[in-house]
Image 1: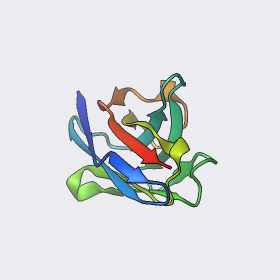
Image 2: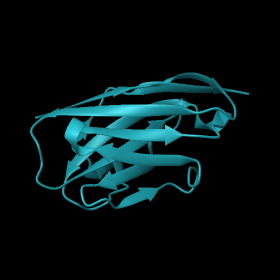
Image 3: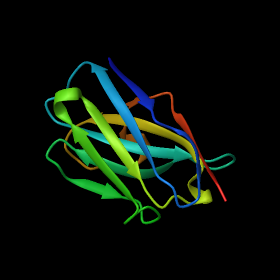
Length: 123
């Protein structure tokens, strides 16, 4: 089993920055991809960004140029640096993990999920 714990959410003004962290523990994968998703009230959970063990990454168009995903293998932690935040970025942000090197963007492709962390951006 894999356990994912997110942290770093909070309240920030528009234009500000936050860095989310996701610490992984439990079973390790020989190859893996870590993803970030978000869910705003009344909306579907949507893909934000992901990074694969080989270093490849993908971003949703809505966050390209503002968000950066990175990982620290020694700490089993993945980060999401969020800059130039907008009120529409307000959501619960979830970390997810999957076995395999594919930089997956679909929610159904991830087997493991964290509990989520709230990000609120005020205007």
